[in-house]
Image (cartoon, rainbow, N blue to C red):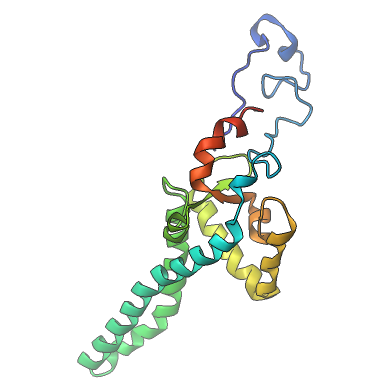
Length: 200
């Protein structure tokens, strides 16, 4: 994670306040929150980070759906042709196609959100990125869980669960809240990131 209590400047080595076991002993600053960092992105102070995010996420999802579908369709075509060449034997590979599709989707989201842009190809096209609630970039496991929980949430709670994003300032969906992630406008973050972290 990119967050860390920055600097033990309270004089721990000389027996100062931070070495006395007070609330600052974990982070080097007088805090009573157990060392938990604050939210990095404030929708009241930085509304431009979240402006139009939900609409952009819809288009980003559609783009990602196309990216995910292309190799899957090519795979099905290959199996169909291979089955004809092998007089039907190759068609037995069809039973592997669905599990392979799921694995491909998880790897795609994990590698994309865990990559340097912390975003899928669709998100990058729509100028979005995924961040943890305290401002750190995504990582592979987070991206994979993000995809899995999204599909689980809309499968069991219907797509109406996406309306959750309309009722919170950070426009987070249910799986964002569970995972502690937030989707923001990427280009805007580079302009406001210093002020977002100034309270650390």
